[in-house]
Length: 113
Length: 116
Image (tube, rainbow over all chains, first blue to last red; front, top):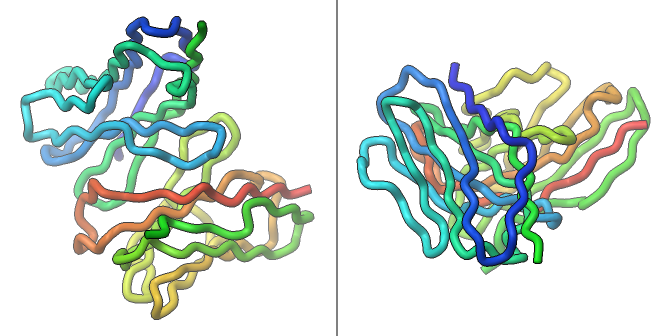
C-alpha cells in the first residue's frame, strides 16, 4: 500500500519570501505520478503542480517548483515570491497503477504581510 | 464550460438516517470518483464509477454505495449514518484510463455533511 507523509502541520512565510513544504512517500511501484494540491477556504482541490516519476527533471509552474528525489522518495514544493493568495492547505498526493489518489494529511500555509 | 458541480453544499442529518449526495462531472469526462475528507485530514478514496459500474473501491463499509447515470453524473449514498461520517465529501471527474494511473482529476467544491 502507498503512504504519503507530510510532517509539517503548519508553516508561515512572509509575503515575497520563499517557503518549502515537505512530503515523503512510500511505494513499491516504479511508474507513478506525484502532485501538490491547494485547498483554499472554498474547499475545492486545485492542482498546483504534477511530477511524473519517470522524468528526472523537476516540474516547474511559474512560482511553484518541486524537488523530486526518487531514491529518497521525497517530493517537496517550493513557493517563491509568496503571495497572500497562497494562504491555504497544501496536500501532497500520489497515484500509481490504480487511478485513485492517496493524500497526505496536509500542511496549512499562512502568508503574512 | 462548467467544472465539477456538487449538491448540496451543506447537509445536516441525524444518526441512523440515510443521505444522498450528487455530482455532475466536468464536460467531456466520463469517470467519477468520490473522496471523504474528515476534519484535519487529507481526502480518502471511497470509490470510482465508469460506465455505470463501480470500478475501484477504497476501504469503506458497504453502507457507502454509489450510482452513475447514463449522462455520467453520479450519486453517493450513505446508509445508517454514524457520527464519524461527518466530513467533506469531494467528487472528482476524469476521462477513463482503463483503471490505470490518472494524472488529470478535476475536483468539485464538496458537500459538507454533519451528522448529529
